[in-house]
Image 1 (tube, rainbow over the protein chains, first blue to last red):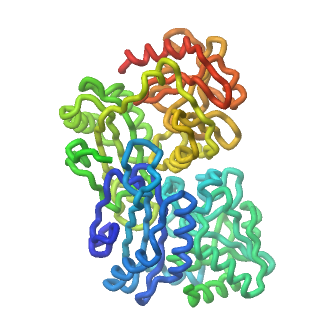
Image 2: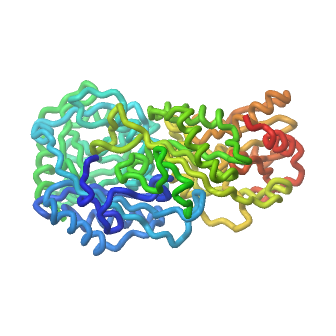
Length: 277
Length: 277
């Protein structure tokens, strides 16, 4: 990507190179976050940092202090008030050969800020087309929910044949349970209630998903985190996708089914666009 | 790792840094091989290259030409005739955000040569202790067998509590099938026949495993690639581990069971030590 070096900080220093001994490269041994920067503000920073801490903790990576990351992100944002920030934290540089790591490794932090992407307005108002991916997600409870750097499943799913007007791919697990989009979390609406897949065996638990669950709680809308399959999803009244960069897209079409009214999706979309905590 | 830059070539150039936009770092989007260099010779180079090609092909990464990699490895070996060579091939540098990749990406090749490791003689003659890992391997047929850069399962397994005299960890899958060691393939011997786990759902199919299967064929020893569980493994007459760097280690101990005689393991070990094809 053509990101000027001054929009990248590696351990606080402008640059665009990392060591070939970094375990992020060698094993995908690290985690990341992608967040929206708007008008000089990082959206949902406390929430992103909390999730970063949780993910680091799950892999026993030492999470850098919030103040340090915040200050470094500020340095990038001073130069570009709008964009998408990415934070990668790896376990650090390998000091000996092999999968085992020394206990006292110094994590590598890679912060970058790229220009905002322009998604079509119709994605937000009219909705998007979703395609069913061939790839099925594997069950690995020890990695489920974590936004880690082992993303070959997403890479393979994104590489599948797809029409240009398809905005996102739907991922099921090996047993046919609906899990998520390739780069988003998914909700369905049925009889005024929300449902989102259980991510205890696979998938990435994003912070927008967390916020939608809180929205439901605040507005007294029942929200269920549970398993469901494609047939149940296709019978939903509404489906929508969320992530920190896109916000919320209603789903217009999936596997021959169509949805043209998205009243609850629109309420949540409106609420998300004002909630930056 | 303190590998001098002159023992590392990145796309043919001495160095020790890669771009932060490399998909190897961002997504673990790449493959690797580790091979033994002895007396100025790369052991089993044609076989390693063939496997590298297969693994690249499975991920639709353009595999660099054999002649190019061979020539670059020669440049490293001229400076150090004995050691362990590692070849990493990633899909290359990201040109746009997201999991999807451009079709015409130029892969990154990272070649390094580190000093040989000294394993204790007793690992080869007396055998090693194997411990059962808590982590269970996930089933992902689209990635099974491939030596790719998504290695968090191995990292977590290697990080489990272990005594210092334990040489390797045994990995089962989610259903309790025996799969492999953290960094080796596994065989058991029963009534003069060989058995090695089926790796169509998870695990890495190493080239030493392939060679042992060929040894069995050459010597008329029946060799079965199939599922088996821990109970069957513990009832084996012999167990042994193989990989390209260690060669072959008989297993002395696992989960309270002990094996003190390894006649077939020793025959295979002897044969492997002379077979460099």
